Length: 370
Image 1: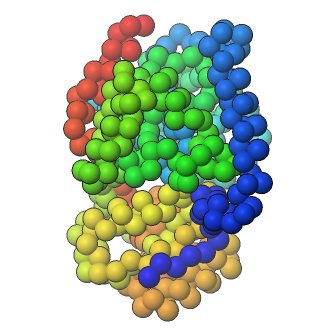
Image 2: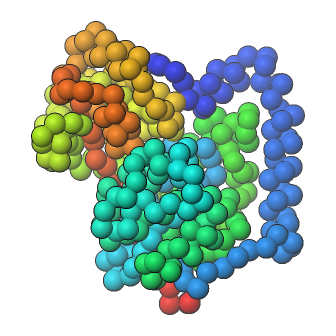
């Protein structure tokens, strides 16, 4: 049984496309496509200025709205660069952050400097995961990059969600695509579908990372489709592996518990992410007895009403445990005052299932070329 709550954009669109109202959106999709094409054409002609920084710049992005597994990919790439002895900083837009400054240092690499509201979900999550990696948010990545270079003297800037942010030049463009639906879910450009750009935009990518590539048949078809559009791009496959879980609040909130402890449990999965089904797929790796999904819109800010509804569903489902994502953790903690019902946060790591050394080669080649 799957429980639904306020639906995300993709789910709303899927319902809408099943009605005659879909035809009302098609002209807007054409206008959007024309705007994207003209913008990319002007960049190709050099009529729009591309600014550069005196260091290696690596972009990680996607062509669809949310749910591609990009954030774990950025964390994995940052750790890989660190292992090579490189000083790394991550630059993000800071989606839905409340800080007024043009540029905000979320983490100096040693400690988290601002609240989740000031940083945005992804930036705060990265700051908790990474040591010795400054995390900086700002709509203008060039200004954020200047801050990173002047304050932290880094070797590499890692741009999160920057495939369409072409104002800042980059040495490597990495594109994350979910193997289950690489070209949007539903397919089509906004607002009819979830694509920011046409699939032909894959041609700009140096490397395509297929995420959630758990099923050989599905990932094989996705890889073949990508190679048809971007024959020169290196295509790698990855999965999201649960590593451990920990309590949302309490004295032992930093304690790590092996995911084997979830085996045979009845779980209520609560999340506000772009692809909630992917969270269920990841939880299935832990062999629970059952999973009920309670999904909220991407980047949802939880309220007292939400808390009461979550607890009601928990009791109705006779679940053993509520499990949420690290992206949702802090916003849920803000409304939870006690340790019952128990809420656990699942930690996940992106694992490249083949050719991890090729990724390292691409990254290091871009740095040697500087």
